[in-house]
Length: 344
Image (tube, rainbow, N blue to C red; front, side, top):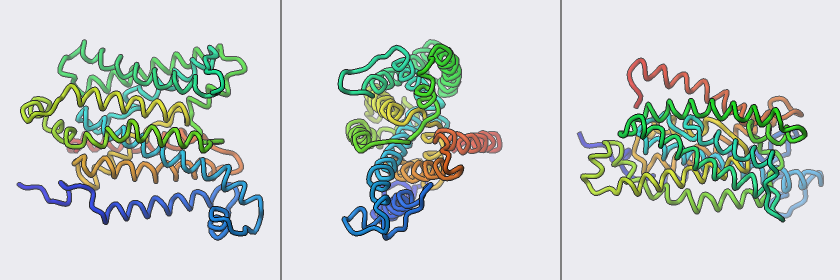
């Protein structure tokens, strides 16, 4: 039976406009709300140079809220996009950077850089950032190599199982690093639990550059990822360069995850739950799934960050705790659905 144009075509202008409006509304709400609630009129005036009722509001908006919310939105889009692409590549909606161990590997690289004092002169965070990206890609290569050794068909259940075991191994190694970290314990805890506190416009620019450099190639693989849905052999028969697509998706996704971890630490489950929910609502076509996942990830992580800094105000929860609590519940629901009638 022929699929409907709505589910098989590109993202329609109406849907794009709706999601853009939702994203902007969420952005404004997250800038306005927090431990200090700022009236929307003051937010508008602070951004566009008008008078605000309190001068401290201007400082809070420009130097605390705006860069933080920008980083949350860009990171949510990046992690969700990577999750959707990896799920399409591996043909399993339970795959993402956290379940495959890529995020944990990136956090291990950043923590190792902190303990060993690896840095770049003049760039304080360049050492952990570079190590996070290297370890993210290295972790993915190791997991795929182990899966190749077990079953050269790259069975998805083997890859996910190895990813879970690898994550446990990385957790043990992180515990060892923490034991010998001394005064660097707080910095390592930051990387393992995730936080968007104190983010800057420079870090937002790095995330935006990462989305352009590594995210755009993922968007361009939508047709090829659709071909993967019917199996690699069929994809080869219709002319899809399978090896090139695999390398492109793996390299771009692992690099983008590494950038996110290097800035916000390990924020789990975003790449799992957001694409899965979008797939249930909009169908499996990656021409719609990838952009919608990016939109939804932006909204989700901005709201998760708002919850992290508001629920126990003036205390702040690590954002990784918030996403893990939500992700764990959704993960259980996914497994329950798979036992009842199969995962779509």
